[in-house]
Each structure stands twice: as C-alpha cells, then as structure tokens.
Image 1 (cartoon, rainbow, N blue to C red):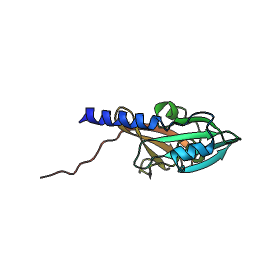
Image 2: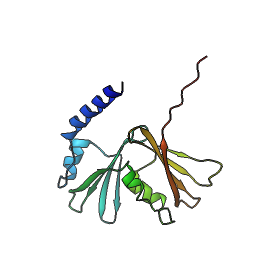
Image 3: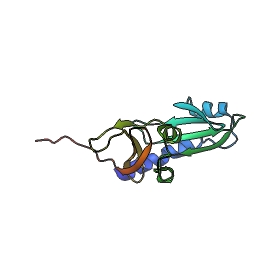
Image 4: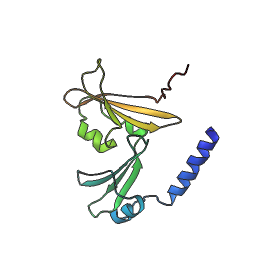
Amino acid sequence: MRHFALALLSALLLALAGCAVTPGMTRDEVLASWGRPTAELERGGVHRLQYSRQPMGQSVVMVDLDADGRVVQAQEVMDPRHFYQIDTSGNTTQADILWAFGPPAKVDGVMAWKGDIWSYRWRDVEDMWFWVYFDPAGVVRRTQQGQDVPVFPMFR
C-alpha cells in the first residue's frame, strides 16, 4: 500500500510540474494556472498570494509578487526550514504567523496553556502537526511539532 501511495504522489507531482509557478510570471499567469488564492496579503511592499490546503490538506504555498505584479518567489512553507525561523523570544505575533503560514487548520486550547494554540497539518515522511503557542496577548512563546496519530474506534 505504501508503494502505491508513493507512486500516486510521484504521478501527482509530475502532473503539477507543468503548472509550476516560476519567477517573472505575472499575477494573471499564476491565477490562470493555480486559480484564485485562499488569501491575498500586502506587507512591506510585497503582495502575497496564499494557496493553503488547510484545514485537511498538508500544503501551504506562498507566491510573492513585486510592485509590478511579477512573481519573485513561490515556496512551500509547511516544512521545518520555515518552522525554525519563528522567533519565540516575544517579537512574533499572530499577524506574523498568518503572513508566514496562513490560517491554521484549527485553534486549540489546553488547561496548562493560557493562550491559543494554532495547529497546522504538514507532511514529512509521515503525517505531522505543527503547533504555535501564543500567550494571551497574541505573541508566540513556543512551537512544537509531532506526529499525526489517527484515532480509530475500538471494535468489540
């Protein structure tokens, strides 16, 4: 079954390769290829198209456009390289996380933590979660990642 899933994923990636977003493309070319983004944001002179597959998907692709509406970069952000860039010293806010990763798959809370916990699905070798812990003021204080363990009902 695992080999079948890997073969299917490989075929899907090959099919999407023809739809790759490359630097220099216009906004209209991106929209024609990828469709309407899940969100569009402006920050520091950058116009960002967010293509999120959250809450059930495991991918978030950010397409950054320059002032002329041309692609500067397009990148998958659900990966450890991007997770490790989050500053947990008290300088990163919910707005910063929305800019970097888009809306979470879900917002959780637990008794042992006084703020919100944003949960993102992503895929490494297996299905994973990435959590961002905010204090009550909406500032990032910690992050964590872990395996997505499915819960199956018990049969008798």
